[in-house]
Image 1: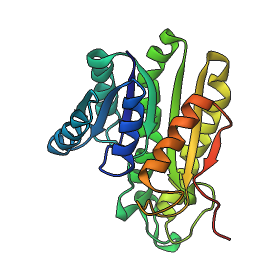
Image 2: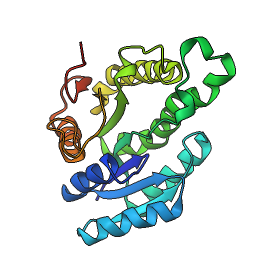
Image 3: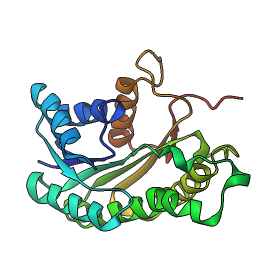
Length: 221
């Protein structure tokens, strides 16, 4: 059995995606900062008959991410699918004219160093399997810079560039990198951006292996 590893496990999209990939036969590894939070999510998945384990790590600490993913692979099988979708902190979202160089340290660690550490941790296992999927989830500021949220706009753009380079560089190795842009809020009542619909979309990106960038719904005009 191979593992679906989720960086940024939460009760909305994260839980829905874990259910979808778990239902497809993957072991589920949930990575988050708080062990009690992980215990609750794993218990919920267990009630659905899905094998899930929690691993604590902070996305701002690249070493802890690598350690968590190594432990997940050792416990549940090699990581075939990695989803990187932690929710940015509110203090990343200062207006551009109020943003100084130190304000970018955490956003760049969150959206660039974190993904790089996570990808480097799972790539050896994917190469051994001969297949793999890297899924990146971002908001609209990744493709349309928003001066009101400079930290995420800059950091998401860098993450997008990294993921796009992975898409091209890893395709010959049967490892697919793809990005899902969610322009608005994730809403259970939304036709296109409910947790369940987005989870299905992410699974289709994994199984269908289309292009690099996908949109949950069109960007607002």
